[in-house]
Image 1 (cartoon, rainbow, N blue to C red):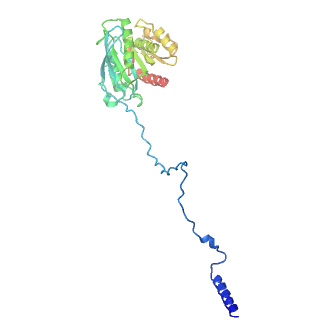
Image 2 (cartoon, rainbow, N blue to C red; image 1 turned 180 degrees about the horizontal axis):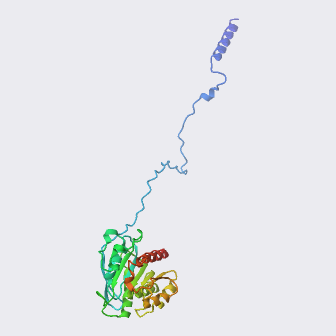
Image 3 (cartoon, helix red, strand yellow; image 1 turned 120 degrees about the vertical axis):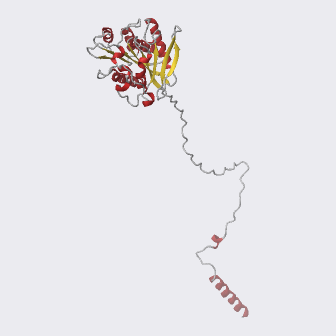
Length: 318
């Protein structure tokens, strides 16, 4: 009887312990912590590279620009040779741009390259830096010259034909042809000049030199002449103006060719009218020749037309 009572007491005590244990809906196994172990990779398994930080983008680098050389406005003397070895003297008026188009100005037989000084300074378009003192004749007096567009600032090259210091003492027409061609070639090689944007302008003998020199440059592929501006041509350099103009227009049909004359200058009148193509400017029943066409009394003036010529020629060359 004592044994049965002891057993009963033990059973009741066990039930009491169970009642004080964990709640029935929380499995005891879920509370057992998992042991963390370092696992060694097999010898033939490559070790992954550690993550690298994302690169911080650097500032956009500033492109290195080739500095543009701007030459002072003061004219430079240039000595060069014609094909026969004759030494010639020229003057280079640098542009405010680089590389710049260049226009070669060829004088008439009544003077030398200094006849173009005021026009050359004006064409430089460099303000007071490139100003020229007023002269007696209209083409030597910049006070009435029309205003140039701000963006128009070509380099300018003038020269003196042989035997023409102060004025031409002789008339070696065939040699002047060599001089005109040498001047075109020299201008295309000047520092700061674009050899593919060369222009030519001239008066009288220089008018023929400009047209022939422009045609010759393109035919010889010594550069690119974009156009010629002729004040009173007259076939003075042993080559017919008509033939030179036709050759220029035939080989370079898009090139500009301007011819200016008055009705009483028969040689210029006939020359300008002999060519179909290009621009012809007739200043009417006046008796003006060569640089006399650069005249404040003419409206529009020859210099107004020169601006149009340069702008249209450079537009073709773009």
